[in-house]
Length: 443
Picture 1 (cartoon, rainbow, N blue to C red):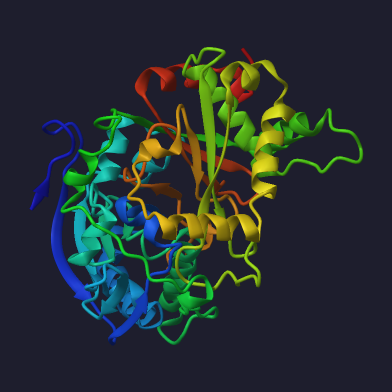
Picture 2 (cartoon, rainbow, N blue to C red):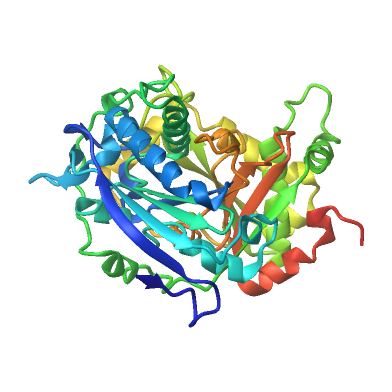
C-alpha cells in the first residue's frame, strides 16, 4: 500500500510491507487522575533515525520485534486497551497487543531527514514514518495503545512510535524505549530498571468522564475553531550558546539570589523570541506552560520508574510589553517562580479541582499566544541503542503540535547542546528564523 506524501508526489513514497500484533499476558491497571486530562490529546509520536546497511533490515526487524514482545511483558499497560465501565471510570485492560508495521522508503536517506533544518519536504516524509497521525487518545478504546513502524531507508532504519498519552508521559516513554533497546541488545531477559505499575501511589480516585464520540466531535466543540496550518523547525543550540543564554539571564542577579536553571533561562529566551516573532502588542497577554514532572513534587515522592502520567501543566502569563521590554531575568524569574510554587500542595489542589469538575481539554486551553514546553533535554534519547548505534536524530511527529508547542531534546553530541523543536504559524516562523537575537548569530 503506497502512502502519498502531502500533495501528489511531492516527496518519495513510503510503502507499508507488513503489519503484525505483538502481545503479552493479560494484565490491567486503573488510570489515575494524572492520566485523564490527556484523553483528548493525541498519541505522542517519536521518530528515531539510525544509520545501518539496508541489507541488515530484516534481521533488525526480527530482533526488535522479539525484544518488543519481551518489553511488553514488563510494560504490560502498553499492550492493553482503554476500557470505560458503567460508572464512566477508565482503566487499561487486556492483552490485545501493540501494532508493528513494516514499511519501505528506499528513496530516502538518513541525511535527508537528520539535518538541523531539513525543510518542509522532509517534514512531510517524516509524518509517514510514524503511525497514528491524527489519532486521539480516546481511540485507545478500540486501537492499540502502542504502534511501532519500522521503515527501511536507503541507508538506514526509521523507528516511528505512537504512544497513547493517556497511559504514559515523557519520563515513562523514554524508560520504555531505553528498556526495549536494552532487551534488543541483550537478546531477552529483563530490563535493568523495572517499571512501577501501582497507579494508586499517585492517586486512587475514580473519575467519571463523558467522552465524545470521536476526535472530530471533540474538535468541533473548540471555541477557537479549527487548527491553524503550522510549520515545524528544529533549532540546534550548541553548548556554548546555551551557556551564553544562561549567563545572560543570571548576569544581573544579586549574589544571594537563587540562580536560574538552564531550562528557565532557555525557556525565557524562547518565550521572548516567539513573542517578538508573533508581533504581539504591548498589552497582548502571552502565556508560558511547562509540563512539569511531579514525581519529585509529591509527598512522598515517587521514583522515575513510576509508569504512567505524573505531569501537570504549570502556567504563567504576562503582557508582551512587559516581557519584551524587561531584561532576560524578568522572564526567567516568572518561570522560576511558577515552577517553584508548584509543590505537593499545589499538585494536590490541581488534582482535586479536576476530580470535582472533569474537563475534556482543547489546545486553546493553554492560553493566549502560548509557548508550551514538553519533553526535556534530560531525557537520554540518544542512548536508545538497539544494537544499531546511537540514533542520528530524534524527532517528534506531527501530533500534539499546536501553535507555540516546543519539544526540547539533548543535542546528539552529548556535550550540553539542546535541540529546540518548535511549531509556529508560517509568518512568525519566517521572522523567527531571521531573528539574530534568538539564534545568537552575528548580523
